[in-house]
Length: 86
Image (cartoon, rainbow, N blue to C red; front, side):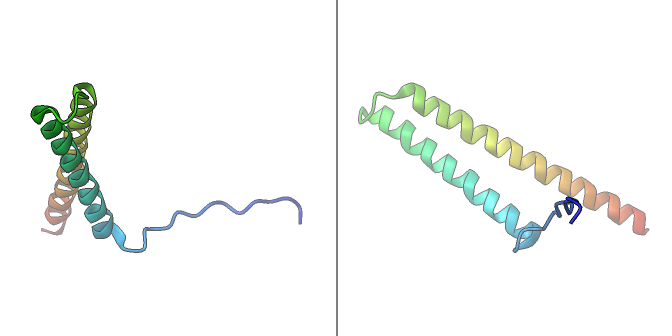
């Protein structure tokens, strides 16, 4: 009981990497749908929150870009692993 603290351990999510990617994809899709609904509301005159709609659209676009960057990095890593096995 000398006050030593055990180091924190990193734990993988319960579903693993595939589940994490699926969850991320669902979140990006939800952002895209929300942005589409906000833009449609502005276009039909149901809402006058053009700034909110534009921000939601940009957020959805950036989220999708980030998801594609993660996908590209994973695919690049897989290609490297395949090359190492040859």
